[in-house]
Amino acid sequence: MTSQPLRITIWNEFVHEREDPVVGKLYPDGIHGAIAASLREKLGEAAEVSTATQDQPEHGLSAEKLAATDVLYWWGHAAHNDVSDEVVDRVQQRVLEGMGLVVLHSAHDSKIFKRLLGTRCSLRWREVGERERLWITAPGHPLVSGLPSEYIELPHAEMYGEYFDIPQPDDVIFISWFEGGEVFRSGCTFTRGAGKIFYFRPGHETYPIYYDPNIQQVLANAAMWARPSGVTYVGECRNPQESLSPIEKRD
Image: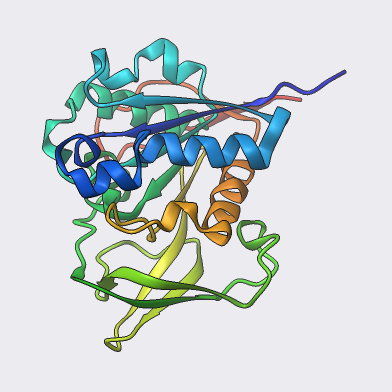
């Protein structure tokens, strides 16, 4: 029997690309479009990739859309507070049920990431376009499969620095070093309910980071790693700290 394609949704607030000509020129189809194109190329028939943006009804994340999503990518920066709490509740519930979530760059400050982690997720930052080296700290992990070196180097990046106010990750996959001397846990995994979460730091809107082949490889790996595990959770999460219990495993 042929396995079903992995159903991926790329969500983007889609603000910078339409308001800043520099960003619009760099990402003419939106950051979500660039990521979707790279995933389609790398995953081929193994995945069905769609996109959603904040300006759509229900932010493009209706109950039906989320029910048909195995892995959700989330990019946000300028409009975190404009995301409906009802939609955040809906996404949280789906993660607890087993949907994978890939949180990108400045989405560390998104409602959904802070809700799932239960902390401020605050950090230090500096935007000067300095060099970044992301060292692999978990060699052999599926998230770094296919990378040709023990690190990824980006010539221009926004600095994110410690302290990063997150709970202890399940695994730290990358630690970044920046020219200014700071370091940062740039690739972290978490488990909430039956869902896997991967936070991946690179991706500032004014740099062509999502066109970098190594970054694209990590994003493709993330889809396969975060896919639902087969554990089914039932019930409704009524507060950010509530966990749901597994009741069965599917074949």
